[in-house]
Amino acid sequence: MLQNLKIALLTKEQNVWFIRAEKGKYAKHFRAGGVIAIEHLERAYSGNIPSALPTEEFLKVQLLANEKYSEFRESTDGKESRKLNRAGFNILSQIRRFSNEIKCGDLIVTRNEKDDGYSFGICSDTIPYIDHTPIRIPTTKKDGTLGFERSSLEYKLRKRVIWGPSISRSELPGAVRKATSGQQTVTSLNNHKEKIFHLIYPFFTDGESLFFSNKIKTSHRVNALAVGKLFQNVALIKSLTEILLSEEHFDINRLAQLAESAVLLGTSDIVTCQAEFMSPGDMWCRIPLIGESLTNQIFASVLACLLLTGQVGAEEIASLTNNEAAPTLAIKKDTNDIFSDKYKTPAISQKLKSIAKAASSQAENIESQDHSIIEVKKSLNLSLTKVDTEKLEAFEFGINVLEIGKSHENR
Image (cartoon, rainbow, N blue to C red; front, side, top):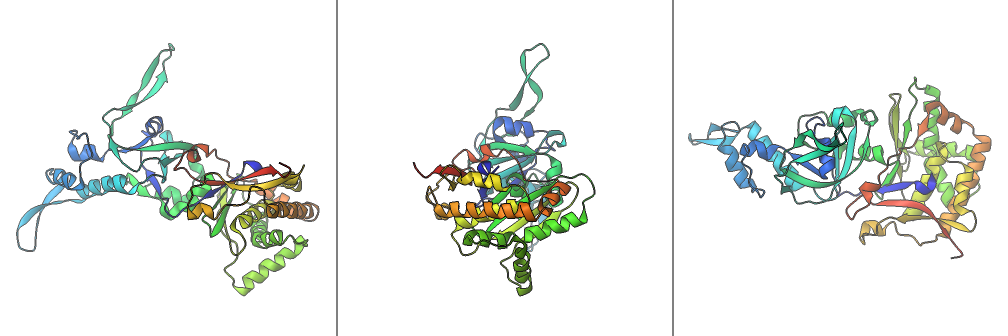
């Protein structure tokens, strides 16, 4: 697990958008064409759409000429003039948002066909375009000949998107489901950005905190004692992280005292959580990153999260330092900016090796003394988010990640 783990880098500039595809009717067309598209130009122009995107001024003139989207209103001087009505203003604002606000690198979410989950993609070109060529879905007929599905996507205002994974609708938290159930075609999901990223990455960081999630997969009634113990274990993450960073030998049973002291002192340097126990459900955690080298903190915090939720054991952690190997935590794409500079570390870091050895030692203590971690994992059927996100990362403007690996010191 450790050597396949990715920690996504969350930037403030990246927005998250939900694009409605006629209740999923055109989701397949979006994926097949590598696009998102909206119908609002067709509404504004009644079918006679120009070959280039008109300016906002021309769009407004077009809408004002249509009685469906405008009405006469009296001004303060008693004169009447045509003004956009609610429907006209909505068309103009949706075209404006689609054209001007969705930019390269933004995360795109759309609902799939037949209520079968949601797809995730990355906008790969800020500039919108008009394409009069319908997007059709290839299919194989019963006699083996190639053909196309009956439906086609005719919407001409489009943006390019690199599509990645899809997830089941049942995986979405209630707040996100509610945010995607409205009527607007283009909806900002920035208020739910963290929860959206939790759906596709078990870990991500904004440089100030590490975010970690567990999926509670049990379909039975949730054991209250197991949930309480899970929260208690998670509360120890920051304390265990500090122990790993200091490379101390420490009695794991004293971690609770450190965590309780932090709560009583009212410090902000504590782990916080949100949860949705719906059987199945989710728990989302935020671990503050303060002081120590950012890469070292993230590495130690990830190991602490995995240890205290029973996701890895001593043997797997020890494998990071076996046979003269040293663990690495490297940024996937060096973008040569201040954000990525924060995560740079030497190819072989002795500090990461020391942290891994300390974690392996603590894992042995946990496995021999504190069986409740494993029992909680079994009771709640805890697991990490496992989504193939490679397509979201494998191009210039895709999501950047930190990856755990190994280097050999004698090379």
